[in-house]
Length: 116
Image (cartoon, rainbow, N blue to C red; front, side, top):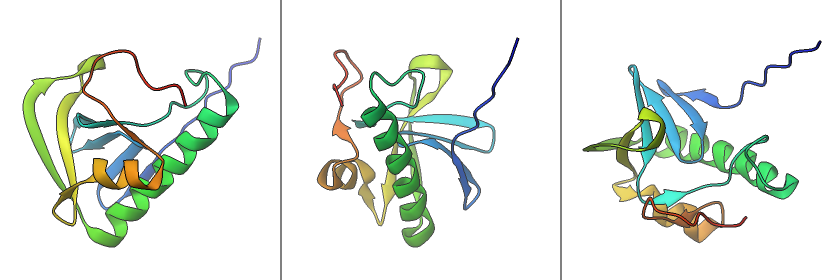
């Protein structure tokens, strides 16, 4: 029996960028409430979705490194016990950039999720 552990994400500026829409900071897990990004394997439906998830994670980490960040908790929980929040980069919701650059889609927290 083989067990394979895959650790994805990037540690940058005191944050663990888990994926393009989830970050951890100071023992808090935050889910960005205004946009969605693709999932990694095995939750990805297609290889292309996984590949885009890798790009989304890298781009979010790059933006945080280059431009700084502000986490705005919304005072409610999202799925999987994460706190809902808005992540601001350069004073603007990062959702705008994610959508404009093609690595995210606006999302209101309800299904259906995008088909990447």
